[in-house]
Picture 1 (cartoon, one colour):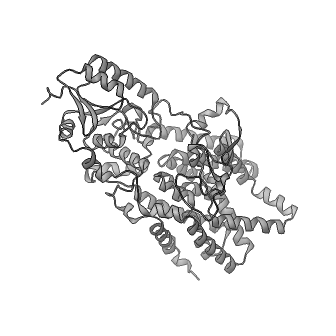
Picture 2: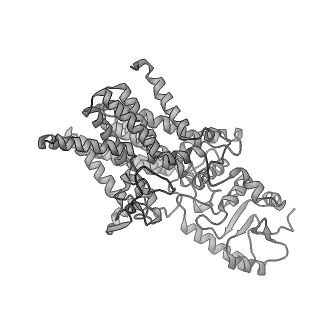
Picture 3: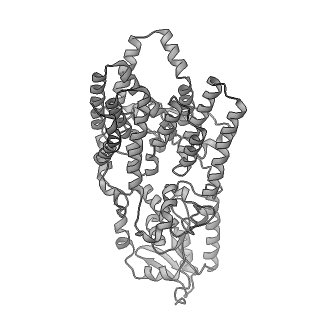
Length: 550
C-alpha cells in the first residue's frame, strides 16, 4: 500500500515516466527545433520576432515585425504568451534557436496528471486507484494528437480539468480563483478561455438554483470576469487586428461519432477498432473534432452501461439526473456548440441550420468548434472511472484499470509512435544551408530593414524560409502564417505594392520577394538599372537601389 507521505513523489514521478514513454526527450533541448511541424514553427517564429520588441510596450504582446499589420500580436502566432512574457527580459542571454515549447509540453503532462488525480480523489478514497486513473488523462488521445499536429499550447488541457475540479469539489471555489484561472487561460490559448468561461457560467447557475445566491450578485461576478478578460485581452493585443471573425464554423467541427472514431485525424494510424466506412470524414477540417476516447475508456463505458441497465431502478435514475443536472447542462451547451450548425454523422451531413447573427460573435472567433468538446470528453473520463470505483471492489477495479490502461496504450500505439519520433515537417537546422547559399543574402540583410511578399497572403509559398531569413537578420515582414490574419491589411499592402511596381517607386528599405507571376514579369519590365532583380537561390527577388547603396 502506498503511504500518503510519499504521494508527492508519485505525483511527479509517474507523469515524468509517462512523458518519457510517450514523447521524445530531445524536445526538452531548448536549442533543438527539428521536431517542429508547420504550426510549431509558426509558434517559434512568433516568439523569435517578439524577442526584438521593446520590453515595455503597448499592447504588451505587440509583434509588428512578424506580419506588420497582417497579424500584429504574438497571440495570433499561438506562441504561449505567458512563457514569451517570462522569457522576454532574458532574451539577450538566450541562443537564437531557443525554444520553450518542449518544456511546456512536459509541464502540461505533469499538471494534467496532478489535476486529474485531485479530481479522482473527490470520487475515490483508494490512493492506488486514483494514481492509476490519472494515467488515463495523460495518455488521452486528444492530448497526444494535439502535440502530434504541432499544437503545444493546446496540450494544456489541464486548464479544462482545473475548471472541472473547481466545479466538482465539495468546498466552494473562491471567485478569485475562478477569475485567476480564466485570466491565466488567456495567457495560454483563447480556446481554453472560452471553455472555462462556460464552466464558470454553469458554476454560477448552480449557486443560483441550489444555494439561492442573489441573481444580481452572480451577474456582477460574471460581468467582472468578462470585463477583466476583455481588459487583459486589450493589454495583451488581442484586438490589434480588425477582422478576427473569419469563417470556418461548421467546417472544423465535432462529429456525432467523434468520441468513438479513432480515424478522424490527419495521420494514417491503425486501431484495434476496425476501420468501418462510417468512420470516414469528407470535410478537410473535420480532424479538429478528433475526440477518440480510447479503447480502454470505451470498454469500461460499455461495461458501466450494461451494469446500470441490469441494476436499473427508475428512482435511482431520477436521482442521478437530479444530481448531475449541471454537468448535463454544461455538456448540452458544449456539444451543441462543438457540433456546429452543420451536423455530421461520419461522412454524412444529416442536418444544418443558419446561425442567428447575434451568435456569430462567438462562432466566428471560435470557428474550430470541434475543440470545444474537450470538457465533455473529460467529463466522460471522470464519470466512467468513478463508476468503476463505485461498482467494483478495490482489487478488481484496479485490475480493470490496469488492463484497460494497457489496452488503451496499445490501441493508440501509432499516435505514441509519432510523438516519440520527433519527426517534424520543418528541418529548421537545414534552412540556411539549403535555402540561402548565395552571398547576396548577407548583403540584403545589411541593406534592408524589411521583406515584403508580393503579395502578402495567408501562408504564402516559401513562408518558412523567408520568415526565417527575416527574423534571423532582425528584419520585419508583411507576410507569414498565423492562427488569425488581417485580410483588410493584406489587401491594402497588396494594392500599395501594385502601385510601387507599376510606377517603379519602391520602398528603398524593403526587399521584395515575388510569389506572383504576373507582377514579377511587370517588375522585370519596369525595373530601372539601379535595382537588382533576379533569382537568388531560386527566390525571385527585387532589391531597390541595390547598386546605389553602400
